[in-house]
Image (tube, rainbow, N blue to C red; front, side):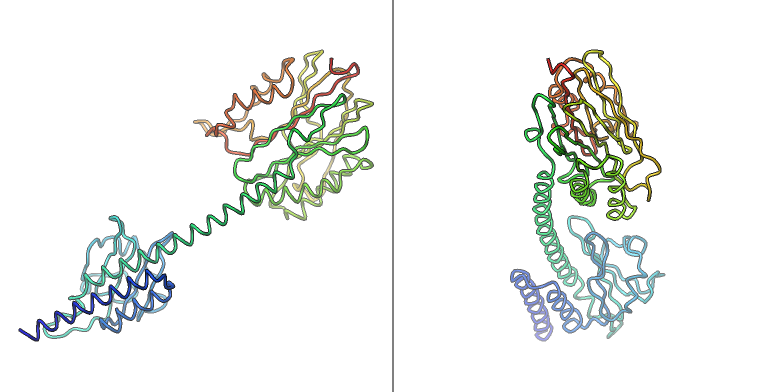
Length: 414
């Protein structure tokens, strides 16, 4: 009786010391590798387990520890098929098994009633009448595995939170850098020859929309609006590259046709055929009141002439940048704005929304808001308010950019 009590005391002392050792290690923030090493030592050296494999779930199932089983064991296990059927410690030596090697015991490890790990034990040593001494430690193994698994998962989540925080800061910096490339309305020309307005609202921190205004000469101003296919960081990087190329290539002595031919090659080199850019690019001369433009696969801007109350779309042009190795044609168009007019350019995020039936596209609301004597600034403000853009409308799923201009006509703005 005394020997039995001594053994029980010895076992209890070992378990308490083991739990204390692991808890202290966790509190000391030892590495995952060191935690697994101590855990494996307790199972194999102290508890004499011949073969053990621990499968852990984080984003997916992975092998946390494999001691004694073949290296290919985990790859041949279907957790849903082979292990989800066990919700308590189970002896399965005599059961039909799908495992590549014989497994004697399955120990599920749960957290908040959900399996986060499975401990599979094999090659148990039998003694006496076939009762393994391991059986006396199964609850302890389950508890120990739970502590280890949760600790490792907490470490992973902590590292992930640090990574996410670093990524967030990088995205905030990228957003600030990108916003520096896009002129605000306050920096756009507004004088007796032209009045320009703009609005920019990326769906994520960074976006694939872009607009710009370039003073080409004393009497010529160039402007454009563009949209990269796709969203997110890759679209934003391509757009930043495109902005640099456009600024370098769009000059007073270069025609729009030549500019687009060279831009198409630069986009092909940058995107390697994986993305393309739609673009509306124009040039306006203050003295002749001549507007020259090319629409490269972009949403046709609206031109509203106040005197005639005529609304038209500017759609002459070519295919988008980066769609083809060579642009098969470029239709460069021109018109003289003799009467006061307003031009409204936008990206497709403004007119593509998610409805119950799917994605819908429509410009009717834009046309309605533009066909009036109101200023372009008022038109844009009304459109933004009506579509609840700044309120985070769930129907909007893309970047939204607007740039427009009011032209005075031959008799000025009055």
